[in-house]
Image 1 (tube, rainbow, N blue to C red):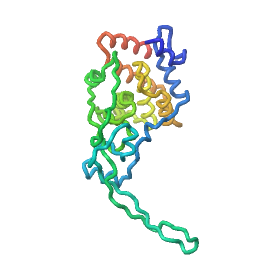
Image 2 (cartoon, one colour):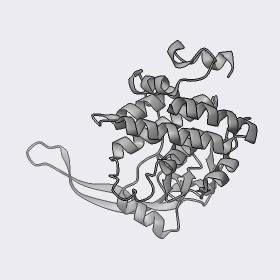
Image 3 (spheres, one colour):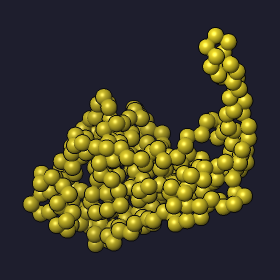
Length: 279
């Protein structure tokens, strides 16, 4: 860990050997101020009717009008638009007030939205971590990264069974990848073990983002927003009660993900650190 990295932590989060104290760091994530940026609101949320209409046109990727893609540095291809319904209010003059009032709403089809594949521009930049490899981790953990198949551009990624998907327009793709790995490794995407009660959605999102938060710090990821991650954690946590078992499960998942993507020599070091944390 570099001196610059250590400076990002409170002194209490780093021990005398320069190692990050996961428990202190997680406590900071739950209590330090956070701020949600525009990560989850850059795209227009289409109505269910328009989503069905887009699916019927074979669209299974993020869609947005020309102005949104332009703001994101991508230019839609001419003729690549897809049709969605646009409201067209019918107005008439109110006899008493003399003002125009809406009396009915009609809809018209307009090719005004463009799927991601019908735009051109820079692709999402996946940061490289010199000490950790995503493909090595996937193979070791028996997890598959599948193509993203959702119209919602505000959704950064999702996971199911032992599969993870990251949006081609994710703002922080590697941090999102960590989050989805966390869901899988924490057992959120599979049936709970016999006799074990599944956790609530709030606790599940807290655990997954907490795992991503610890991974990003441990691997010195620079392309992410810690304050936004803290805000996400605190939003989903709300009034939920987090138990010691929930926290220890996060530490176990983080330890396994770290070791899975490390070289053999580095994995041995991580295993010793994980045993020390668990004790």
